[in-house]
Length: 349
Image 1 (cartoon, rainbow, N blue to C red):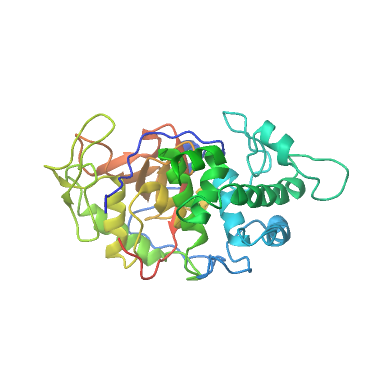
Image 2: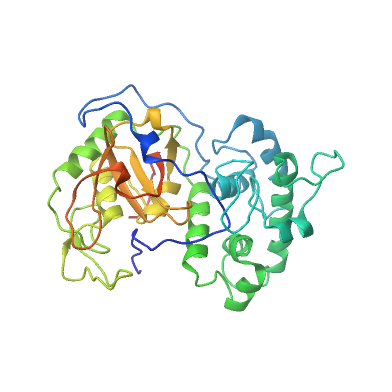
């Protein structure tokens, strides 16, 4: 099986999310070995993605809307719909993307005109109103599921790909199109919807254990595609700039975080975007040592990940030609979020 690396170049999608600024992500100077109070409990995703129950943690004001809309048709479940909304806008009803997608479900104006509905019966179809946009998103998913139901491959994946890239593209390529953006989009949503319900995020002890494991790797060379749960490894070819990791034993950014959390007893997926989907976002003021720091313009476009130290710094494997080191959070301008891994069970690395 080919290994995907976390350092994919930036992708563009219709979904949008507010960027977390580095200046707001800095908490009071927290030492890397300082333990903080036990992790807050979250409502994690159920083991059965086809379950009719909503188990993904969502803002309380949208739970009933998602629960109801999540049973619009057999192809849509509450968890899948919640994962899509999290991916598209992080439940921000005022989100607007650079390409013009609008609202909590990130409808393009032409798509809203064709598929938007008056979900709350107030006589208006308002893309900015979640009471209209959430049931409209479910209805649109059901419609495009029918449009691609004869396309080979996984029907859920094809439906999500059609939401992102259009039904025509899915039919043209006989499945999920070969667009990196769309492939990451589908993988991220499905990872969110399929997370096992462990009931809580990584503990403070596990975060510090992961960070300490990464500390021991400082000075290890960067290797494109390198690193696994056992430690440094040779990578693959090639980065967008043509740099190969096939002759370098080391880590890329997500290989380092995967290794660090394996030492803490937690399995993470391979790519940075997938690791974000397998984590619970935390507020900047709640960040603690070992939390993951993600960079990118959108959830599916995340291209870099590091381990939060405290005081505005992280430990990461930056890019080809460098080594594992400590960097300030504002080393890149597209800081997206801090998040805490949700322990996965029986997951292949």
